Figure 1 (tube, each protein chain N blue to C red):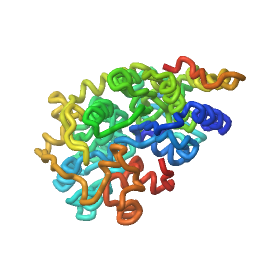
Figure 2 (figure 1 turned 60 degrees about the vertical axis):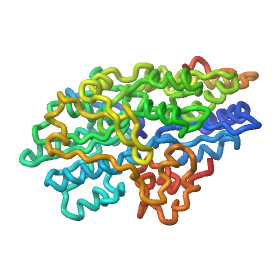
Figure 3 (figure 1 turned 120 degrees about the vertical axis):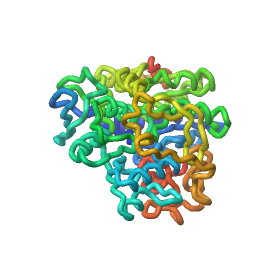
Figure 4 (figure 1 turned 90 degrees about the horizontal axis):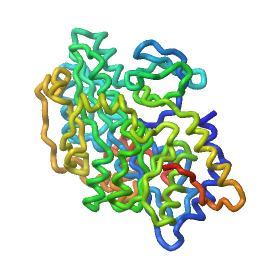
Amino acid sequence: MQVDAFQSRELVEQLTADIARLAPTDQTYKIMHVCGSHEHSLSQWGLRSLLPATVELIAGPGCPVCVCPEHEIREAIAVAERGALLLTYGDMLRVPTRQGSLLDASTRGADVKLVYSAFDAARVAREQPDREVCFFAVGFETTAAPTAALALADPPPNLSILTAHRLTPPAMDLLLRSGEIEIDALVAPGHVSVVIGAESWRSFPDDFGLPTVVAGFEPVDLLLGVRAILQQARDGVAELDNVYKRVVKPEGNPRARAAMDQVFEVENVWWRGLGELPDTGLVLRESMAAVDARQRFGIRFAAAEDELPKGCQCNRVMLGQITPAECGLFRTACHPMQPYGPCMVSQEGTCYIWHQYGGQAA
Amino acid sequence: MCLAVPMKVTAVEGDEIVVELQGVTQRARADLLPDVALGDHVIVHAGYAITVLDEVEAEATLGLFDTLGMPGGSGAGGGDAG
């Protein structure tokens, strides 16, 4: 019932009328979201077609699978090639690297399987106590919290964790400061904010002057977010707003935050195609060494400077500099059956989503 | 990864819960949501319940439209959504 209300045609029409009234007439206004699921909703529901031509809603670096660097995927492959059973979220299996994908490794005999939940890794490890089982843990704060819970729930001794978690607010902060991302306003990710809290986005209005709104995933949620942003722009203010209060609290989920803090520490990490971003990744604390796959298997690969295949413009897509349709490889040399770059693999990748739903022009 | 709709809690068994959506049930972990109760609607992410849906806030968000829909509302509302 709740969900239906947030998909209401009547409310959508009301919101789009408000948005049309609030939209600037003489210049383009660029709003970025940083969540693959936001992109999915926008595209699936065709919401861009409801926005005035002056309002651009663009996708930012919101796909954790896409930004997972090659060397961390190669670490996962190496763990599997040493005989461990490697478990990871489904999207990771086909991400291409210059050494092939995890799926390629499995065709060469490595044992790689997908799981839906971090906790499945513990269950599988308990079912196979004589075998090393490694969970390749990828994702933003929403999956980092479950990984932390897994690490704290007395994991079996044959289970280890290979982390590739990334933090969204500090990465956006750096990419805005460097000028690689140029926008007028920000839609903050809904379920990342469930974990870390709406207040985690406070610096974006305060330091960057960006109207910033935490929004959910239904059409009404997203249009509420756009309307709130345009209202701020019209009023000449930049504030932190939350139109997803039914699930996002200012402080987030305290238990999840405490678990993450107990298990992880913040470290400099690489984002595929975007380079090294200081203090934007989570790695296991020394106190968690017993479950750290990098320590157990003695595997730690260095990052490569250039991690995208030649000609791939995933980096520019993730920075909102171009749309997928502006990449010459989109739907020609790069498509879901044979993804050339990482953004065409994941269901959260902008290129994959635009391929799937036609990719309305922004 | 983040697209998750609220599911109703139909059983609580220690750190595990059973959730239901339109007749389909699944098990989820409650490690990150220790106070979850029977009948709550929760968001489940990667097999873990991460938050309880606040029905009052849901109604409040939808309630914003009542004022906006009134003559002369002209989008000046939006309420105290911050």
